[in-house]
Image (cartoon, rainbow, N blue to C red):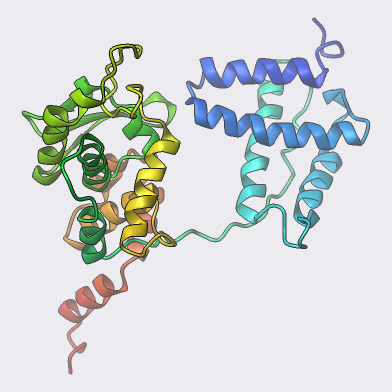
Length: 314
C-alpha cells in the first residue's frame, strides 16, 4: 500500500500497537498507558477534522501540547500535569517515528516539538523506623495475614515493582539461595537477593498460608500470591494490602508500593551500597535513573560531609 492510502490514523495506530507489543516487548500495563495517551491525541485530532496522519505537521503537534497545557477540570485545576503531558508526547513521538521508520509516512512532525520541562522527582522514602512500623502492622496467623506480611517484606527487601511482585510464580522464589527472579519493564529478567526476614515471611506463607487460599474449583495457577478466590493476586489487590497496612500506622498519605521500592534503594545507599549495585537491583536501564535516590537523604549528606571535610567540625 502507498503512503497516501496508509495514512488513516486508525490503521496506523493498530500497526504501532502491534509493534510495541511484539517488537519492543512492552508489558500490558505499559501498552495500556500508550493506548490511553494516543487515544487522547486521536480524539483531539478528530475534533479538529484530522483523520489522515499525512495531514499532521509540527504546528498540529505543538497545538496539541498547548491544548494539554491549558485544559482544565471542572473545579478549575490543570487537567494534566507537566509529567503527564511529557508522557503523552513520548507516546506521540513513538507513534510518528514508527510510521516514518516503517515507510508509512514521509516525515516525523514531532522532531522540532518541545515538551514541558518536568522537575526531577525526588522519592519520599520512609525512615527505617517507619518501615518497621508498616511491616509490623500486620498481625495474626490467618492465611491472608501471612500472605500480606510476605508481600510487604518482599517489596521492601527486593525493591521490586508491584507488577513484578504479583507476576511472580512459586518457582521464581528460591528459598534455598535467598534469591528472587523478576521480570521488569520490557520483559527483562533479573535475579535479586532477598534478606532473611523476607525469606522467613515467604516461607511461612507458602507453608501455612497459600495452601488455605487455594480453591478446588478455581483454575489452577502457579502464582506465588493468591487472592481469596484462589486466583493470582492483582496489582489493585496488592495495592490495597499496602494501603491498609499504612492506614493501621497512620501513614496512608505517604505510603504506596513504590514508596517501599524508594525506601529500599535509599536505605541501601545510606548504608554504603554502590550505586551500580542498586541500579542492578532495581532493574534501571540507566544509572541516571538510580541517581535520583542519592538526593533523598540529607542526613547521609551531612554525615559524609562531617566525616570528610577537614573543617566541618572546627
